[in-house]
Image 1 (tube, rainbow, N blue to C red):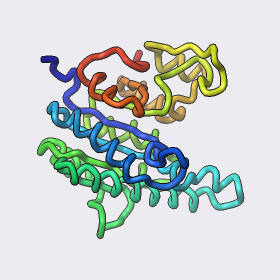
Image 2: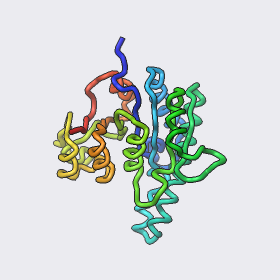
Image 3: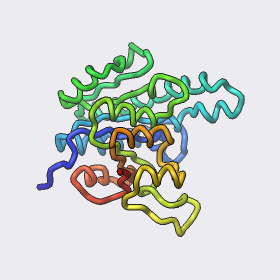
Length: 238
């Protein structure tokens, strides 16, 4: 029986994984799928922090391109992450996985405020901690929030679940000859502008020697396989 190679992880997911085929909104069956994947690693004894983006509902930077104030758009995006967090919390609790949602913006009726010590205590008690509201400030993406919270909560790795199998030298959705990296350094990701995560997130992980593992969350079971040591996706490190 294999043992987990990580004790505590921060799982970063894009909001699109909740949208299903229509590409917008929250599909309950997708929330159920994600809950099952997360529970599979929690059942292995791994402490799990989770951050979900808002791309299935609202993107502040896109709204800014269309004339809305960037600050206003970013706050709307933060609210959308709370919606996604509550949907996944509901799905997790339905399958018996104790969960807490902590928000960086105040929504006291549905989520606890994000306080580092409180989040750590929940993790130590075996609860899945969903961090909503991004970093709590405009101009910071949920990727940057993931890098920040992973560092704060002493996670051993950021697991970034995407719709592709890892980091490629160019967009695999556009180019059939795109090459998958098994491993790559932070500096190469930045220099090649590979857009795995934004520059702030990559730099923060690099400064804190926090590895990032990019994988396809749509492949059922891959999250657990990575936790147990399988060499899937792409590992970003020094």
